Length: 449
Image (cartoon, rainbow, N blue to C red):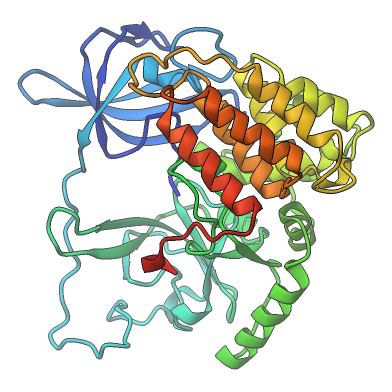
């Protein structure tokens, strides 16, 4: 899933509704139009990068990178982008050339692959622009053994559970929304072998995109998909062994927290090689947090626990084990600083160890008090939304994750629905969905069950 920030996402056109100057001095006047191509975080977690094409009146496009500080108190920043950017229509980049079709159509179950054998790479990263077609790993073992390497990032990193090959790729394709012809292909991305070998030290993962709770459309930073993690040294000889392994891993990981699953799958991962690019920033974040502990510098842990950071679950688990964790979490949840609040939510979602259970007497009063203190003014330039909509949604997701189904919590959410009547219909629906989830009602529409 690509990074999104507020109303900003890749492959959409935006109009600047309030002029600004970014952190590097790039001036963007009022009514500037541009198409965003990618959004990412810097390796130090202090900067947000937006790569877009500024579109002139004559249609000419100029690639440009905008840089915003995570610590900024004004101007474009996390949770305030709507004040500066108005979202427009989908704007997809020029369609890349489609891989040539084979002379004879493959059997329905066949997977498109290069005509030449991939054995010549002998488990190494291709140092050429090589079309892998539908494969994500440059090996001959087959896609049944291919899994993504966690935590992912701007480029794809995938591994083979049979031979151990790890390959960095970039994805091209068309989702078919405008052409009716959906296709995907992968190109090997030339990458120094030392960096690929370092990435190979990270766990593999399989993400179930259909297994997340059926909730409302929300920021990508709040969505959690069920995930299976494999240690980096996992190897199988055939599909039968793979099936048995995944059953064993699923049984072992199902009672654990996400953080515990990740900790158990991560081995000893050294510091990244010199000159490792920001495009692998997610992996850099994770490696750094692996060397921390509950008594590490609080500001460092807070930065790693940000909802946009790949290290968030690991950092939150360390914070929860810290002395005074409950007081720290509640202080952060009440903070007006968006980044501090974000770390508080990361803690809250996995805060079961801080409570005696989902009906802990201090849980509902504390969270309801925070929610009732949120301002209800109109969100600028977004009709029908209150200015605290993201914070409300973050609290609701955490309440659902915790299963906080006490009568006091349910009564408090119903009272909040009355308070928000005619102010934010999206939040009213979200609150009802959470109430349904707490009461064991399946929100998933019949067509998707």
